[in-house]
Image (cartoon, rainbow, N blue to C red; front, side, top):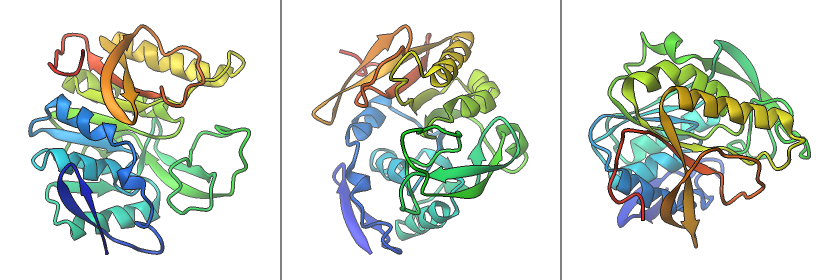
Length: 262
């Protein structure tokens, strides 16, 4: 069992078949500041793409009251995240062993490293055309509508989405939930890189169209020396190749949170 310090608090980190040895929990420290500035209350935090609980620990370092519901299709990551919850005696935290998509069924998850918890793994075919697929596994995916009788989702304050290219399918599945709850959405959208990458660009534009329909604004997370700086309002994500500029916050246009902007 390992132990780490985040935001002044100590957390237990299980070490299971090398999982937990990585420095992954210490990455993206800016996320802690952003979560603090969002001033989340006691509703629900939806985490689509749990991996091994990086966001969960950051959230609990800021807020131990908000209800956490994580969706994760990788069975190894599901097992590990449940161990992480137990090791820290977290309450009101559940991991649902499925991916979120716009269909119900089974899809192939492609891994681009040998790691069993590869955070770059994607269900999008040829998402990383320049990289070799090391191996694949089949995973379950569900729409939110298909889960509503089993998973009690209500009063959603925030949603985090980190799904390596499958953001469109998640947003399409969550569209009704977003319209009803009007949550803040934290999302990673990797760069299109060039105009020739038409499939990525079309998917990105479809996300933007849904957000516009739902009356949301787009903000790019500005990070300086790995520290949260501010949110930069943008009209569209556009075509770029900056891997340091792929974190976004989608926010209802009528929502104002003091302290997020300079």
